[in-house]
Length: 58
Length: 199
Ligand SMILES: Nc1nc2c(ncn2[C@@H]2O[C@H](COP(=O)(O)OP(=O)(O)OP(=O)(O)O)[C@@H](O)[C@H]2O)c(=O)[nH]1
Ligand SMILES: [Mg+2]
Image (cartoon, rainbow over all chains, first blue to last red; front, side, top):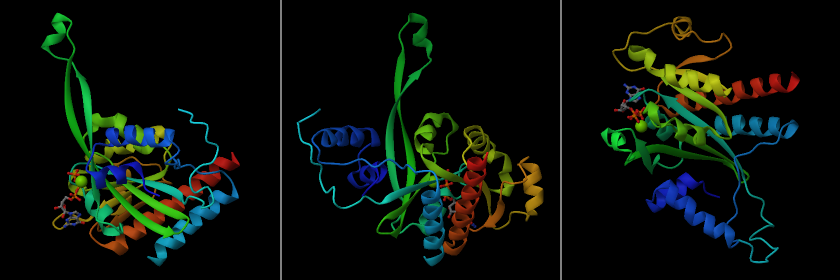
């Protein structure tokens, strides 16, 4: 998984251009989009805890 | 466009959860340095070319002027586990790019506002922005050499911060220090979200 910003940096292309390219790839089912989205509730809490523990372990 | 496929690529492998944190603050305060200190890759710079509608002399003739500007953004990544990735985004320093911020802030769990005690007021726009959006944030005072050391409560008072906004000292160049800042932010965001859920 890569973020749009990451792809843009690697390809050395403007974010806007990458977004257009990705849009075409999504339309062809070649790429999936994952929103930085969190579900509310206990899952969210356990994700945050995992982030804290992961950072501590770095 | 619909090509009539119902299957999607690699549906079997679940995508990792992406967590986004913003690193904001005034010009030259150490945003890029902090992203680089904790990121597993060197901070990537992405450039966005923007077309701005300018208000110029041409408007008198009813012709809209357009010019393009480049905004640079820092970007870092920390892989926590196979199914959890933390992304760090340094916000562009220039205040006029608020609309870029809006996009960056979407889905962000929280923000680090970096402050330099020699130019404390530089972080006011960031603080106002996150307060207005209800984005959990903390203030990390980057300790430059030669800067007078302020007590944390002095910084809190000078920035007119809510008492619950965490303020801490950091050294953006040190990985351990940057880690501590991020941990405190995530814990703060957790607390705020729990409180909002309880309301
Ligand atoms: N002494 C000291 N210098 C620092 C510290 N953090 C950053 N610097 C230096 O300050 C300068 C600016 O840091 P950057 O990380 O580029 O700041 P920035 O916020 O990304 O700057 P812009 O993107 O231009 O707004 C660099 O030369 C850093 O090496 C710090 O904690 N202590
Ligand atoms: Mg920078």
